[in-house]
Image (tube, rainbow, N blue to C red; front, side, top):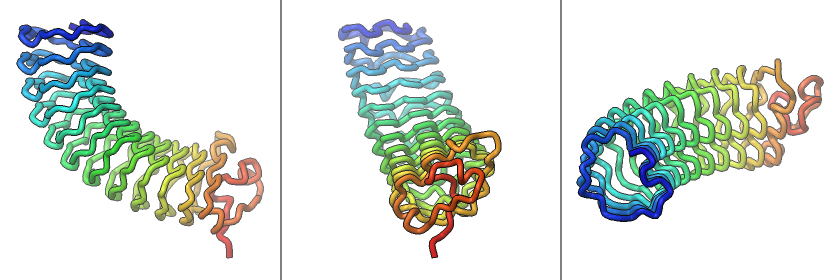
Length: 309
C-alpha cells in the first residue's frame, strides 16, 4: 500500500479493512487529509511504516497496533498532528527512526521502548514539543544523532546513554533548551560536532570528553551560554573551528594551549572563531606572530591569543 493516499483529500472510514497481509505502508497517508479510526488494523506483517503519516492531521489511537516486524519508522509522524499513546509498542526490530517525530505534536511517554537495534536517530525530535523521559534508552547501536534535538523542547537527563557508536553529532542540540550533565559520554568515535550546541542553553562540564577523532567543530558553541573548561581537549585532528565561539558572550576559559593541526587547510578554518566573544576578548589579546596568526582573521585560532595581565 505504499503511497496509496499520498497527497490526496481522502478522509473516509477504512478501519474495517483486512490489512493482515500488507508488508509495506510507506508514505501511505503522507500529505493527505486523512484522520479516521484505524485502531483495529492488523499490521503485524508490515515491515516499513516510513513516512506513513508524514504531514497529516491524523490523530487517532493506534497504541494497540502490533508493530513487532517493522524495521523502518523514519519520518513516520514528521510534521503531523499525532499525539496519542504509543508506550506499549514493540519496536525492537526498528533500525531507522530518523525524523520520526520531527516537527510533530507528539509528547507522550516512550521511555520504555526497546530501541536497542536502532542505528539512525537523525532529527528524531527536531522542532518538536517532545519532552519525556528517555534516560533508560539503549542507544548503543546508534551511529547518527544529527540534529536529534534541534530546536526542540526536550530537556531531560540522558547522561547515562551509551553513545560509543555515534559518529555524527552535528547540530544535535542546536537552538535547544537542553542543559543536563553529559560529562560521562564516550564520544571517541564522533567526527563531527559542527553546530552541536550553537544557540543553545547548554552549560555543563564536558572537559573530559575524548574528542580525538573529531575533525569539525565549526559553530559548535556559537551564540550559546557555554562557559566550561576545555583546556585538556585533544583537538589535533580538527580542521574546522570557524565561528566556534563567535557571539558567545560568556566563554572565557583558557584554551590558548590547544595544539591544532594547521596542515592542509586554509586560515578560513579559523575565521571568526572568537568574533564578538566579549568575555574572551576582555580576557585575552590577539597576538600576530607569523604563520596562521597573520593569515587568519583577528578573531582566529586560540593559539594566537595570550591572557591579558
